[in-house]
Image (cartoon, rainbow, N blue to C red):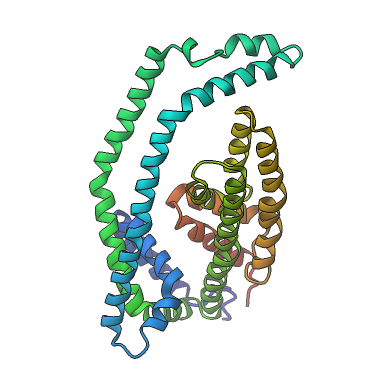
Length: 341
């Protein structure tokens, strides 16, 4: 009797699914660190391959891992130092800037029909009118809760960091062997569909790197140029904040729009308008034009499912979810649309 099931080896697929579920359950405690190690290894493997030429695999993996960890310390130190500078600037400059912004908000509210008076009554005219005891109590509670969470999770972060570094070492040393093993297992269990699934995972990961990560980096660079030209304090830090926001379509606007508004409310109307124009034209154009161009030949997902996969994956797993979400959606789409053979 002919088997019309689209995937050969249904029993093998059942066993493989059960084993995969068991392995996932056991791996859940270390999953964040493993995903970060895999992600960073995927990004940096081409560089490692060039550095590893003529060196034993274990030694080359160790050298690349140590170099990457060492290099990562420098931007981390810069970020800590910059954050301290921003805090000092906020303590010195923020009160007067807030007073000016509140005054301009009152002037703007006065020009609005119907709701203008209600807005003016709700807004304080200056920092002196704010109930600082109530605000301070709420802020102290919020900051205290945040610091408590940071302290409680510090050990978990250190543990996941160690897991990520260990995973990174073995990705450098054994990454190609892992891929061949996964590809062989998929083909053994699913037949031709397994090979298609493996290639789909590869092409989707390539598409995410090309279309999502590269576009976010370009948008961060363009936005940083706009911040610098507008005279915004710490444009490099704001550019770095824009990059992860830009991973989600239209996410970069969540950074440059408030910055442009802040400039306008502080009396720098021309700078705020210029930054808004730059963001709408240059930064948004990179999002709307560059992303589809880079992903055109590498992904099968339409725009909206891809957006949902990126957002859902990011919310579930953080940055590694940017890859996991689209790959999962692409595999589901392949399973639904693949004709029976």
